[in-house]
Length: 124
Image 1: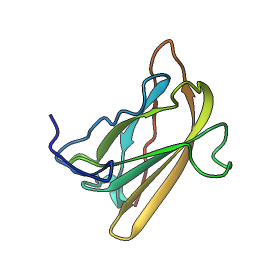
Image 2 (image 1 turned 135 degrees about the vertical axis):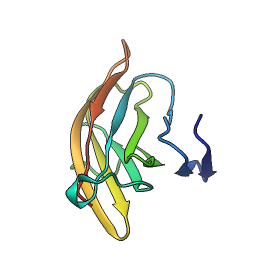
Image 3 (image 1 turned 45 degrees about the horizontal axis):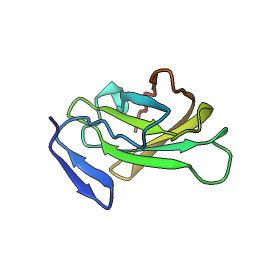
């Protein structure tokens, strides 16, 4: 089990990748690896996942979660849309040492089972 520091409902530090759970209902797993130049894993990078209903160009995210990459640069979290299923957008941003990288990806939240999407980020 991961040892984590929880501050104001946001996980700010973990000893390994962690799953963050939102509300019950429709959900999806977002996971991936953050790297720096040369493909080296970015250990301890901050990763923010923001769920947008419909499109990442709409105003403000519906939900956002924060986690930290493990020593291997991997992260993993769960986004939940409550009862608002269907096609949405997740914006994942990794930050470390003043550098950042962002990627938008389509995501399907569905009640019949948890979907997943891999979003690799880098290089920072």
